[in-house]
Amino acid sequence: MVIVMGPEATQDDVAAIVAVVQAAGVEAFVSRGVRRTIVGLVGDVAQLDQGNLRGMAGVRDVMRVSTPYKLVSRENHPERSTVHVGGVPIGPDTVTLIAGPCAVETPQQTLAAALMAKRAGATLLRGGAYKPRTSPYAFQGLGEAGLRILADVREETGLPIVTEVVDAHDVELVASYADMLQVGTRNAQNFALLQAVGAAGKPVMLKRGMNATIEEWLMAAEYIAQRGNLDIVLCERGIRTFETATRNTLDVSAVPVAQRLSHLPVIIDPSHSGGRRDLVLPLTRAAIAVGADGVIIDVHPAPETALCDGPQALVDSDLDVLADVLHTFPPLLGRAPAVAAVAP
Ligand SMILES: O=C[C@H](O)[C@H](O)COP(=O)(O)O
Ligand SMILES: C=C(OP(=O)(O)O)C(=O)O
Image (cartoon, rainbow, N blue to C red):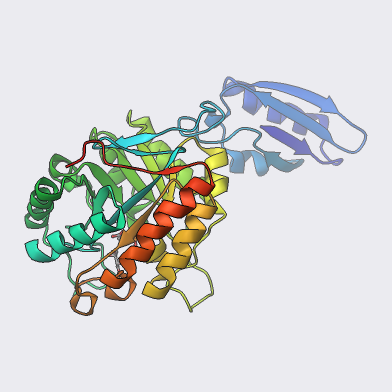
């Protein structure tokens, strides 16, 4: 961390800064220039409150030179990581397709959607049994009955399950069925939930908060990592902007930025970002082109009757194109579509 002090800063102002910094066990190196004085800090600067330092007399600016997140940072872990979910890799060598229904509605609908997902080349099945809904009157998911359906469909199709948990109290239960726990955009800064999933012993997919900066997203991942779990996959799912033509604005630049800052795999959700079926395939192409380590896509056998997010679900007639994108695009970038660990 570097503290820049203006020309008006007195000797006492500089001494006050040095005293605060040293009291926190951090070393301070002062270099006085004609127009400004720079105080360079070395040590565990996480102990210091940047805002408080910025408020002290004579201080012009306070700048971090290292990242505030440590465990998920690429500074301390230069190699990019691969996370395995039920034996399926998500990482730099592959492009993984996770697909399935937005919400688990019935056993028949979930199985039909899982078979669609498989036909498109998915090696992981998505599906929400606990749905975070804007309206308390909207379908909230089947809860544990939905988890049981997912487990049956996993048995039948061999696809490991990715499913969302919305409440810290449900983490143990959801983890007892899931192969990967999903934390959604609405809970992306629910710190108690992040800590609970971090302790659950299952890989976690952390969606980006719809209003979160990339740094806030990585700090959220750090909460999970701090509980001893580094099997985290980051998922860019669109952010809130002024644009109303799409449900959210897909921030494609978040993929290379997050991959540069963090060793964790980064995937894209083209369904929740565009919010429109006609955008899912173009955004999937964009995701692969920008270097995403996978995509998570909604599919539904009858989206006109879907209980959640029907307009963004791919239908049967989209699957061949999706499969083709998955087979032709990754090899252009030296990658392979991720395959199942054990052929079912
Ligand atoms: O699947 C995700 C969410 O539950 C869903 O997108 C929420 O949408 P809503 O705003 O219609 O509740
Ligand atoms: C709730 C979901 O997505 P998001 O959190 O991105 O809205 C989902 O994928 O089911």
